[in-house]
Image (cartoon, rainbow, N blue to C red; front, side, top):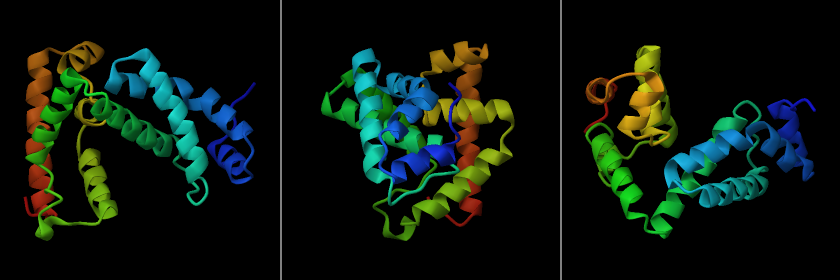
Length: 189
């Protein structure tokens, strides 16, 4: 059976047709499971996160109609659920990595508690996307794998056949460039 287009899947959700969930599972299930597993490091918990994603999508469509960005919409939900699972289940090792990644990014992104730095999420998202567009494909992939998918340095190194030292150096330079890009865009860090 051929997968439906995202717009048709969203139409099923809008009609409250449960076939939308099955179509979503068929088209994006493996990717969502992989995303969740990368965060929680447990197959059963990743399956639960994936299932919770479908429920959250069911409850969020409508009012949202992510016709042109269904996977991004679902991935954001999955990532949020998986991170909450880590917090809820006190997975110390993984939580320590998430904390370390947060610390790395705090050097670049304004703190949400600083009133002068409170910015509209959409505007910041556009600036971040603009920054990612300035990176070559390899650096962009490394950055996204580390800070969106939360891959370890070792996993990134293996995936892209690079030394861990090269991955660390590249990410350090990317964070520095991001900081400069944000400052140039008027963000106070």
